[in-house]
Length: 527
Image (spheres, rainbow, N blue to C red):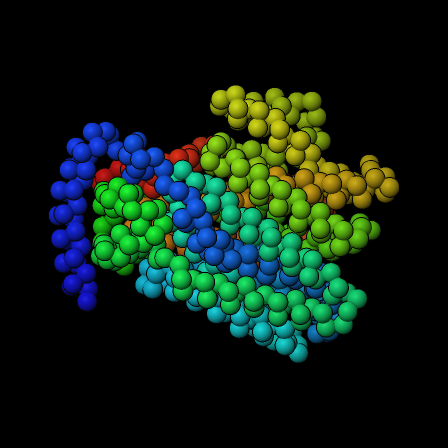
């Protein structure tokens, strides 16, 4: 079988060189790196839209399971008899993140072996099993096992969704479609919070919350059966004819030749299984893998998931109704994600990252620097870009007060009557700043930056750092909050956000509007 695929691939390559030249001469124009000639314009976004929505179900499930524990943790701990044990509560939260590490680690291998459609279905299976185990748990061990199973699906889901969206989207809307995964995540979070509201008043309602999540997981497995496979994966496997059929389904007939010609410039069939871990960590690709791993780690060290995991606990300690406050968190996350959808392909990935991280970082520093904080940003050369970018930064800069509000609310300088407004307001602005850039951009950006040959495995390596850091944040947040207090803890998170701004400024490449092949050539010139 492999021999026949290799022969077909070789024949296709020889034919490709002929029709590339003929096609270019016939059109009489220079082909763009998007694989589309100037005369026929861009393919319709509608052809791939439904498949993007199906893939986004994986991100919806990720968001749902990320937030389902928020409103239900108190009820779970009471029913399963570990109430008041902060380490046990932290373990219930973070055990799924440990499972996420396992799922993410093997996601690249799974995708390279079975393709995206089957990998999505494998992602849905442990989520269905784990949700059922959690819903029927009789003790802490049963809950932990269920959360561990769910976590393996959570580890697979975001990787698969991001890679699939990147490989099936037309270049001119890839950023917009990439934002769909973040919007789906925010909708999943909001759904889990809304469904979880009756948990504290209705006995056993938390079990319903876990049963509900099995429905979108089953829909994901079903709808993926009717979705096209990634043409990039098919081409790497030597299945050129199948790749053409997939492109025709995704882009339309007039764009197939251009898309296949573009693939032939950089993709080489049958090489996906030759990538070794040592090559990713120490070889030609080590720089982009380092950038990716660091970016994901800094994303989690911003402290965002401490909000999604424990906002109910934080609001309760401030005397605020967790239901109304968590609705506001969900709305802030959704609005920021929607703004990212509108801006991703207009302003670019790097601009949104810098604006988002700076919005989260300076929210504490503004209390220290006061009138000089704008000078601080100028000294960091954050504003040396065109006017529209400066305008966006000015628009977003109101978010710099966010973590400062949270830190100030814990200070003795603030009266108790104002503490509630500062704490909740700071948290909402922090979530908004995150969801505009630091949330949706890293996964999309890195899936664009990695060459097709290593894309799946490199993403799995980088996301491993995401899950490791996420695990420890979930495990230790409540304990650190008890030991060092919110003022010091928020300052630590703000410092990591500032580090992220500097790192992005120095290391990240803008990928807006570029084809995957053009990005690969820019980042990794031929050896």
